[in-house]
Image 1 (cartoon, helix red, strand yellow):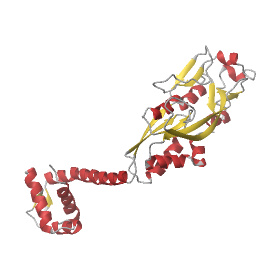
Image 2 (cartoon, rainbow, N blue to C red; image 1 turned 90 degrees about the horizontal axis):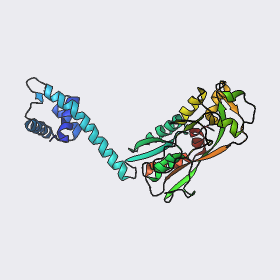
Image 3 (cartoon, rainbow, N blue to C red; image 1 turned 30 degrees about the horizontal axis):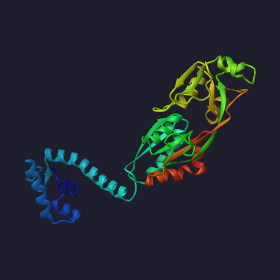
Image 4 (tube, helix red, strand yellow; image 1 turned 180 degrees about the horizontal axis):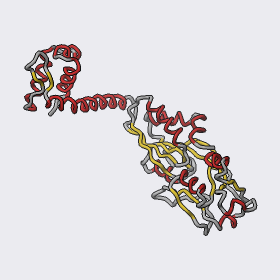
Length: 304
């Protein structure tokens, strides 16, 4: 079995150029460094240094061992740092379920700030839609859910033991491509006007409960896509109609690629939340809860 102390000695010798200077860096006497190297050579039954010249030079076997061994040394040092950070309250891993309505770039900016804490906590992101975002939390697939339509006080299945806060109120606009038949139709559009045309919907990612549908009329043809970004793209392409968050639709409306239409019956806005397992006291989770509670962070994450 490889000895990490021997690998560290090998690394120091190569960097410092001599056994004596390596011993000084490691705070040991030269004879101890010599012993570690000779024992390692004996254990492996190979020569690690060519000692025929004035300076000990690594043999090909020694070079290979050092190059690969440095990966082991780095991993061992990183493991020690992570264990110490975990002991101080940082989780080994934080799982975050993110609804597709949440803007990715601001989220990654927030994650970049979290990495600046050097907590050692590894993040695992999953993309969810509608009820699936809450389900990921209550089934244990996530520790934090961002963009849920449900709240911890709404009496939904599995809400006990979880907390939630408002993330943002999102205003929706019904929009179609300029080539769509509804683009020139008289307003306000009635449900019957809309029912005759295909809707574009983001499919609920829920796995164990009935899926939620939003803005779909009975008997209406539906094109189901996997994300809000895909929904916008499909409507821009003229493949269907439907409600889009105003913040996402505005750039396309301003450039004429989408046409907003008034409805006689419309859902004007919806409230999104972020929720977490209240039983968890980990520092990484608390860091995100604190930052998500800041108004400027909430405004950045959800296009209004």
